[in-house]
Amino acid sequence: MSEVRTRFAPSPTGMLHIGGVRTALFEILMAHHHGGQALLRIEDTDRERLVPGAIRALIEDLRWVGLHFDEGPSFDEIEQADSAPPEGTGIGGPAGPYVQSLRLPKYKEVSERLIASGHAYRCDCTAERLAAERDAQTANKEPVGYSGYCRTRGVPAGVPHVVRFIIPEDRAVTLRDAVKGDVTWEKVILRDPVLLKSDNFPTYHLACVVDDHDMRISHVLRADEWLSTAPLHLLLYEALGWTAPVFAHLPPVLGTDGKKLSKRHGATFLSNFREEGYLPEAVLNFIALIGWSPGEGEEREIFSLGELKQRFTLERVNNAGGVFSYEKLKWMNGMYIRALAPDELAKRLTPFLERAGLVVDNAKLARIAPHVQERMELLPDAVPFIDFLFKESIERDMPSMLKKGMDAPTAETICTKTAEALESLPAFETPAIEAAIRATAEALGLQPGNAFLVIRIAITGKKVTPPLFESIYALGAPQAIARLRETAALLTT
RNA sequence: GGCGCUAUCGUCUAAGGGUUAGGACAAGGCCCUCUCAAGGCUUAAAUAGGGGUUCGAAUCCCCUUAGCGCUACCA
Image 1 (cartoon, rainbow, N blue to C red):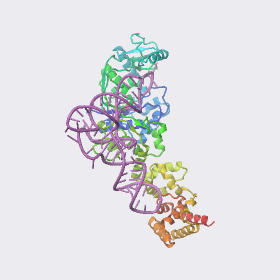
Image 2 (image 1 turned 90 degrees about the vertical axis):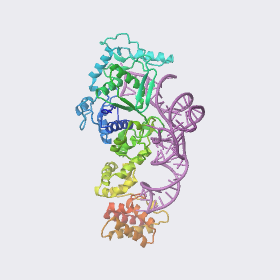
Image 3 (image 1 turned 90 degrees about the horizontal axis):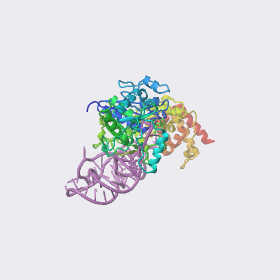
C-alpha cells in the first residue's frame, strides 16, 4: 500500500459527538497503523448552521481525548474562519488551507471545469419551482428529485444560480467498499444534485471530492449515512478523471433503543463525558470496540492508543451498528481509574472535589487516593467517600450507628476509649491505628465489626467509607480524636 | 414510496463450512472481607424465520421479517 492518508472532516455546527470521536479515532488508527498521516479538515460550507467557536471547541475536545492529527488548520486559518478567537496553537501542514471556507476558488474552478466538459450545468430554478416539482412528484407517487429543467436552458453565469451535476441515465455504479464489500446501484436515483450553491459555497459532495483529491487522501472512512451518496462521489471522480480513494463506511453508533445515539440516551457530546468524570483513555478504548474488534481469539479488551494503532485494520471493522453501553463504559472507566498512579488520580480528582465546594488538602488527598481508587467508576464517585476529610464539621448518621443492638452508652464508651487509645499512640500510622482499635474493641468485649461501625460513623459521618484505619490515618490524629470526642458528647446528651 | 445497508446471549463481540458457539459488560450464586468496593470462582443467557447448496451451514445463495440510513442550495 502506498502512502496512507486519512482525514477527519467534521462540520463546525456544534459540539463534537461521541460518534464523531469514533470516526476521528478510526482515521488516526488507520493512518498510523500504516505509517501514514491523519488530517483534520473543517467542513464549514453550511453558512446557516455555522456555530461560532465550534472549531476551537472541536480542537480542544480532540486534544483532551488524546487524538492528535498530523495535519490540520493552522492558527491563522482558524482565526480567519471562526469569529470566536482561537486559543492555543493550530496544527498546520503542507496541504492547507484545511478549512473549506478558505478554499472557495478551488471549488469554483472545478465546477467551471465540469460545466465546460458537459458534466454539469447552471440552474436558476427558484425554491418555489423546486417545491412545486416535488409536490407534483409526491402526488403522482413518483420518485422525487430535480427534473433537469435547466439542463439544456443554458443559464448564463451572470444570473444567480447553482451548479448541478448531470447524473448519467441508466448507469450502474459499483462501490468497492472496504467494510461493506461491493455495493451496486443498478440505477443512480439521485437526480442532478447541487454541487455549488448560490452563495458560491460548495455542497459537501463537491467539496469533499475536491479536497480529498487535493490532499491526496487514500482512504475515506466515514459514517454509514454517507453510503447512499457514494455513487455520486464515484461519478464525480470519474467525470474529473481522478482516481477515487478507498471508501470505508463505518457502522453507526446507536442508543439503547437501536436509534442513532442522541441526547435522550445520556451523554453524547464528548464534553459531557469529560464533565461526568470519564477518563479520556477509557472513552477512546471503549469507543474503539464499537464496530471494531481485534479478533483472532484476542480476549483482552483494554488497549492503549498505541496498542489500538498496532492492531487496527479495516478488515476487522464490523458492518452492523452497535449500541453504546454506558454500563460497560463505566466499568471500563473504573478499570482505567484503578490503573492510575495514586498521585495521578489525586490530580484528576481535584477539580471534581473543588466543584463539590470542598477545599482540598493535598496531603490528605494523597493519603486516601489509593483507597478510593477501587471504589469508583467515575471521578465524582470519590466525593461522597472522601468529603469528610475536607470538612470542618460533619453530619453523622446516628440512626445507623445505633442499630442492631448497639446502644448509646456502649457507643459512647467505644468513642471515648478509642479516642484515648489513639491519643496514646507513639506513631499515628495505619498499622498502629488498626492495632489500637482492635485492642480497644476486644477489651470492651465487642465484635470488631460492630465497634468499627460506630467509629466509622463517628469519624466520617457515614456508614459507607473507604477502609476505616486508612481513613483515620488520612484524616490525621487531631481531627480524628476530636470527632470521636464530639460523638461521645453527642451520645451522652 | 424508492434506493441502499444490517441481523450471534439483554448489550459489545469471537468463531471467515466441521467448536460442548468462546470472551466481556450487566444479572444471580459462592469465596475473600472493618462498611462499600475491588479481586477470584461460578450459574443462567444467543446464531430472527423459511427455503436451498453441501457428507456437513452461525458461516455461502434466495425469500420473508425486523431495524437503520439516504431520498435538501445539511453535513
